[in-house]
Amino acid sequence: MTRLIARLFRNPDAYRIDPGGYARNQIGHFLVIGALPVWLGFPLWVVVVIYALFEWAQWRFAEAEPSDGLEDFAFVLMGALSVDDLMITAPAVSFLAAGYLFRKGY
Image (cartoon, rainbow, N blue to C red; front, side, top):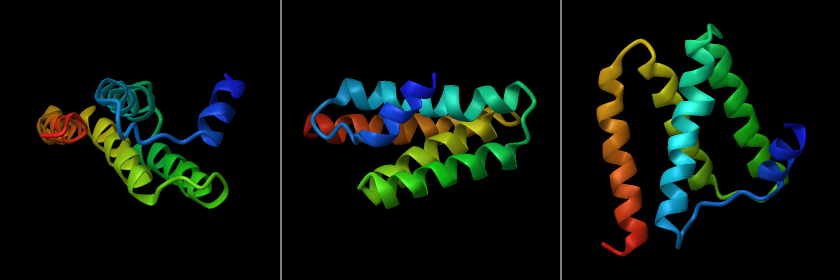
C-alpha cells in the first residue's frame, strides 16, 4: 500500500486525454479517499485535512498541477460530505460529467 501511495504521489495525472481514466480517478477520490474513511468512522475534518496536506505536498514536491489538485480535493470533499447527505452526489455527478465531456472534446 505504501508503494502505491508513493507511486501515485510521484506521478500526478489530470488525465487530460483519457476521459475514462479521469472518471475512474475521480470516482476513486470520491468513494475510496472521501466517503469510505468517513463511513468507517474517521472524522470528516481529519480526512479533509490529511488529503489537503497530501495535495499540497504533491504540488510542492512532485510538480502537480494546482488545478488537478483542487479538482481531486473537491471530489474527496464531496465524497466525505456525501456520507451524511446523499444530495451531495448530485453536484459530484455533474462535475464528473463536465470533466469527462471536456476530455472527450465537447
